[in-house]
Image 1 (cartoon, rainbow, N blue to C red):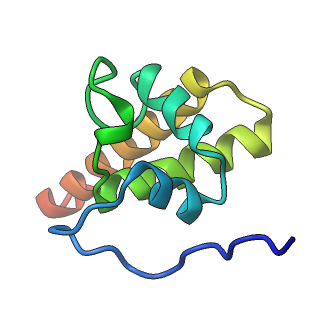
Image 2: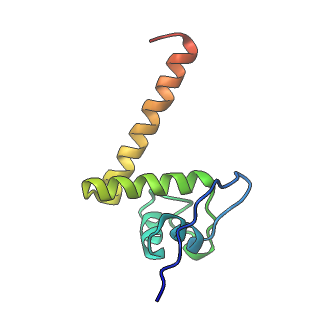
Length: 103
């Protein structure tokens, strides 16, 4: 049986992916997405029915970064989420410093 192809491209901000579409775009099983939503590290509220969630482009980006860290460092979802959050914060701070003219 042939494996489904991974989705590639740019998701527009006003578009949304279903659970299955996000999983396919990340080349993971839908259970991976469900676990991360329920852990509170991806997507909307963990108490919402996961199958009815719609995911934005920022969720797709975050999911891919979480997955990369988990695979590269054999990290659990909480550690991967912390690394992604810290990386985002460093990026925001560097941009802020650049805007203020601080090196």
